[in-house]
Image 1 (tube, rainbow, N blue to C red):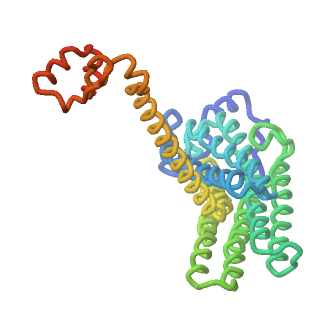
Image 2 (image 1 turned 30 degrees about the vertical axis):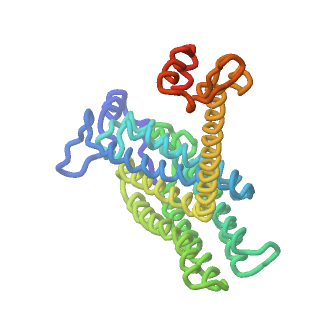
Image 3 (image 1 turned 180 degrees about the vertical axis):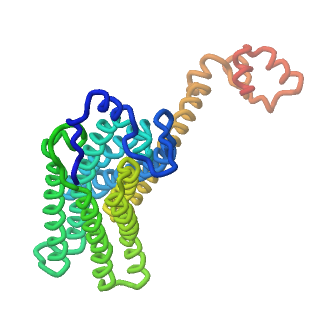
Length: 383
């Protein structure tokens, strides 16, 4: 894409360019450079919801792998950097939404575009590597689940070919994006002398490659599941778990559509942010697809832990109750020999060295026996 030569401008013309709109507005549209309309609140809500959703599934996967299955695989190791890049990408978009998201380029001053395009370049690199890792770890997970070790069947070769295409394409695409302008700084600083080529086609191609891989991710498990020797009801349940890949396909289709719109638009600030938002949606779907096979086991482990904790809590509660009861009983009752040595029994009267049962006394003698007893003994009798 040819770039205008700004070095031929006089200082006054250059200053006017920097303070003017970043793009010539459509006919009848007046640039709003001081308070441009935007959709920052909508962007924060959408990105925040999908970031939260993706993080919940990742945490459930981590819990299931570490504390339920107690096994870690290569795909789980890839999940760590993939989630880190996904998190960095979404946080960058949330930070940018504070500046203003879905703002038309003619509502930015030209001098402010450099910082914005710099953030776009970082977002492109983060998103590209995140997509690469997410697709690879899903396909590795499918190989682990559906292809027995040492087997070289059709599913093995399809998954291996897709992994190879994914790695080679994204590696080449990221290099091409970062070499789109010479020197590198000209990618975001349009005043820097140099030349650039149109790299928008790379974003469109990446969305098409993602759609191809997402369709394969959806079909591969279904092909194997319906050949398993199990009841139709159980097949349907397992197939439903892996059919979550349909979400990724829908997100990939929409992202490809908005990428094509971006490639044909000069309003880069508005259309690129649309591509970024749908990239977040597609990456979140990818994380969910990867985590879903472990989720049932995770919930079983959590339920078992809650049940065991509840049983232990009740056991501890009853143990404390019985202990308190024993202590209370021991506190209230003295040993028989010690009690009789200190105070006469309420059921006996001490006549010299002979104990007479109270039920043999007359009412007058019974009343007199209570009067003769120490106050402390009466207290214990009442209890």
